[in-house]
Image 1: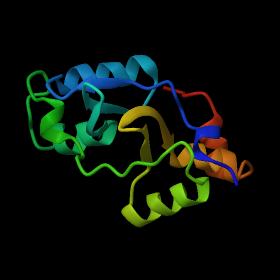
Image 2: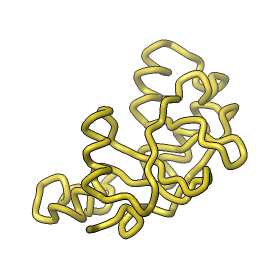
Image 3: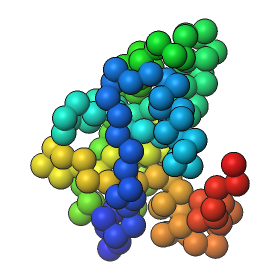
Length: 138
């Protein structure tokens, strides 16, 4: 059995819910990532993706310089443990229609596993794994 902890990302970017959409977008750009985890201390409040900023922020005509992550974050976050089976994590993603799962231990954020991470681990010859393993091009 392959566990989530064997391939999860531990290079996490967390932000406060009062941070602006612009600040989050700049973090994503500067770090070549597609999401930030919104926290309050050790508690995970939700997740914001680059798509969330576009669809829930820009398309809804929010002022990206004053609108906060709390206004657009996905709150009902599905989480896993680093000891959970990778196949079970993939099943959770499928069931809940999500592409990323924060990894918690004793309520504390320790990692993040994405659909791309699972593809690289479970199906390294797949197109998704190939794309996910490649360096960002933008």
